[in-house]
Image (cartoon, rainbow, N blue to C red):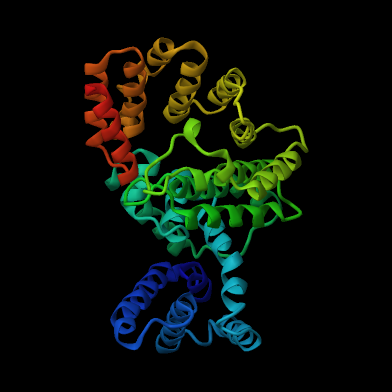
Length: 395
């Protein structure tokens, strides 16, 4: 909704578009309890927000300047039924337009990704800060600066082409992967998985992959998402508790998504470039097997570490080290990460360290790690798992 309205109002109207969407949500909260929930709630919200935007255009004397956009909107509305095809027709590329607009080369990479997550992904400053492993104040400042640049320069929502498209593709793919990961493992809340985010990110990635100018790394990212989404039905049990990968019921995995993953993985083999997404897709493809080849996974993590030596990659690599070389060597591998300020409130580091210490029968140290992890932000299913592991230390 925000992306569509920003296209109508122009990039300078980004803040106004967000306000209009919030007002539409508020109006729904005020009227639906008394008038009943409409048959198609998304269409109701979309129509309400769009009408409010048109009122702003007329009230502020923007009609002449926006005449072309308004005529295009009226033509689209006349041709399509609001309650059937219009949502897909309008939104399917507007979200991508918004992300590509935010990922302007003139805007610093971290700021453009953060703004995309805020406007197109609907994430809060707190959620974005968690994704970046940084402070909320830092993210808030990035958002303010990025919006100012878009407004002051009158940046366009038109989809870029040629070299400019390629230049923006890297941060756009990063945004989609951030959105998917937040859905795959929610940082907070009652649910571990937010399927809507996972499948929206997958849909948008497939839209880019379907473009004639798409690069093989886009197919690699689609493969990563498809493989990981295929395991979503088995990630939680009937009580909503987290199920670790080695304990998952493979019969619950989505075979169609697995097939989609291998299809795009095959397409990603075109060209000479090997991106981070290629390596991650290869790792995910091995995890799909009945008996994962952990030495191969470790070798791939070594390659990924060479491409992206982030602390999160180092932590994931340590898990593979534990499977291949034992918990002692894995524990040594993550010790340098303990002092990393980016991971200060990252519960997974403490949880992995606690697991390794527990395997080494260092129960008191393991319990201290799990207690510290429980003080960090995480979802309720993850918190319940941490409590079970803490009880295991005592037992």
